[in-house]
Image (cartoon, rainbow, N blue to C red):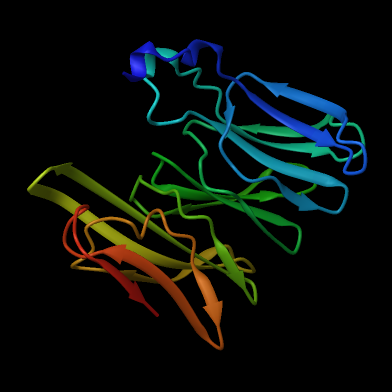
Length: 212
């Protein structure tokens, strides 16, 4: 059924809409899909570009990257091309952007003003849709790898990371032995010293678990 859809017409756009009139102020089109929520930093909009993984690969454009746009006119300030697709919404802290990459087994830290790469944080786990939570200069997100077929789960590893954005290095990593999926999808939350995330127990089809 997916092959019957017009994925060949799919591209990405960021649109500025006047809240009073509903009219489009500017539109910036991209060669691939915008999979992330726009992140605003001052007069800059940060978005990331990649493929919808449910679309047939023959429609993928492989135009991956993180882009900064001028809020006033939609023009590109900088673009940082990537080897892997970008699905997780980036996070901002103290002049830096952190973005986990889908398929790369890493999270990239960029200079928010120039787009230059500051650091690559290697996780070794390529499946990451978890948008980072930042608390007091530490970014928290999940990642994983799995080879699933219904009733037959194998080669699965799911972990949760804390990355110090001052030193641009991993502070700690927790492996969830019984996680069968989800921790690499969930965006964490924070309350009173506790970071909360979730996963499915032992299988992608299993019971949901919330952990703090």
